[in-house]
Length: 340
Image (cartoon, rainbow, N blue to C red; front, side):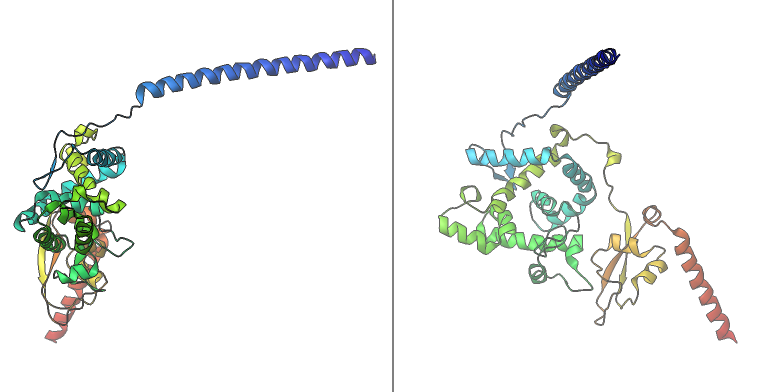
């Protein structure tokens, strides 16, 4: 009896092992086939293309010497990075549609080449960002440089965040640099490295132009990043960026009012204009606090949204309406009291 049980148990074990082996073999074969299908699908459908460089390109009318091996390879690097960093570049394309018309107009008025709009784009992505060093706004101006060129910068007001005024301040710097170096390309490089830094390197290396300079990593890439922005933004479909006009961020429609007195509470001021605090700050990011002290009675121009932009920015419209009704009620009560 014991022999029978042992034999039977051994048979069960052998059968179980066989079944498991067959299942494992079947699963393994299935997985191998699935892997093969996935690999074929990946190879057939996912493509990364090497990019062709343009035959010629210029910056602000100054020819880029693509015949130099280091120059062409630097451009190739930045073009590849920005083409295949699709999310970031697509967002920049969307923002350009909103902000470039304003920047282009001011560059033209300030006699600065149109290509410098791409400098602002690569500096900030056209966002009101702050660098680790404290440079702020679309043009990434440092506080002292901004003040030197007429901008007001303090805890209440920071005009580095004012697109029109900061663009004019950047233009003032670029014209100074062009006058100093005789080249818009060197002016652009100095925007990153500083005029003193560029002059020191020109003197030390006995060079005459940006493309013959040995510079730090950031500045050596800087102009090529601007050139890459020019190539992609000017011809986005050439680099695989497909979008509809409705996908782009539209220019902001606004009116302006002038104030020459202090505003104690910008939230209440916003409600009086039929908007809210968020909307006021969205259009006027240069207002840095919740009030606007103005003891000297300077004139400030504040932007207010036109319809339908106001409706597209304010979520709780009843809150704004309630404030308007309370103001009207208070005015009526004040009027009735004066009659008694």
